[in-house]
Image 1 (cartoon, helix red, strand yellow):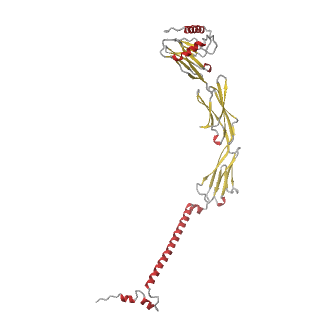
Image 2 (tube, rainbow, N blue to C red; image 1 turned 135 degrees about the horizontal axis):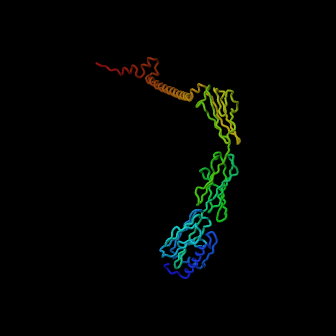
Image 3 (cartoon, rainbow, N blue to C red; image 1 turned 90 degrees about the horizontal axis):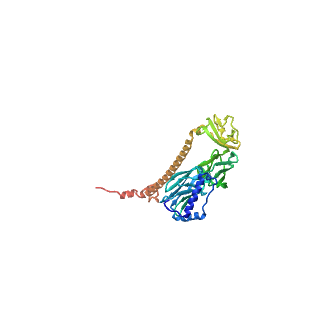
Length: 423
């Protein structure tokens, strides 16, 4: 080395060399086994730690999924060719420079130089988790540590239900269990693409830092939930898109709808009528029946499963026709009210209503015009009487008609006064 180590460093090198020789001769085991270790005094490591402010040795923590590869890097800034060493959590030497004393072939040298010692660890398990030490033989010696954290995804995901088939309106209780994970998994529930709330979660610690998580949810199922997946979804840093699905068989009573196949308009007297009953249920409706509400079906009605047919309508067919469907869950009905129009009314259809409206408007207009004529007649009659009275003014006291004419304004006297003579 370029620098002269002190007495503590010389002792450390001597012990490390002895331990490496013993390991090379096969007297030590792998990382998971026991070995004859030569621990240094605690005061020595305290001295290394106290020199942290003067360290130029660097490393980072490593997080790895179980079974994958972890890479540990010990880096030195401005190194003067001092020796770099990597130790495991049991203080066993994994690499001394580019030499591997530890007989665990899962450790492989990735890079060695004066400024870096990089080592890979394949097929990582939970037993490899812990603190690893990088040491640099300077004066005084330096040490830095990196922590390997191993993530373990749930190895199994199971949904349990009480039974396979439910009736609409029943409450379904489902349990989802995520086995043996690290850290504890977070469980979410979905119905189709819709997230469900209200799940109850229990976390149980198991051996070796592992956790078992159980989530329970209760849902009241409807007919729309039949064959819709209930999804147990796990959120975990070690795995993506881990889920399991449970399909619920939901049974429900029929839903009944009655539609008119023919005619597509007014039901006229003498024309045919065809009705269709659509009944949907689970299980499939066992039978479909037709009845006439508050009366019996006419003799000329033909019924064929979901269809009702009348070849020639008449007014005696008026009434409400009901379709009934049932299955093991229950029964339901659908109604159609028939009104048969006579041929004439049917032909007029909406126009008959328009004629009535127009007739009413015309009657109102005629009445208004008659009222106006009466008012005008009375008005002109009053003005005409006044005119004749003024013409006979001054003749009220006359003894006879001739005198009245003579005495009236504008009579003969007046005429005489108004005469003009021309020479």
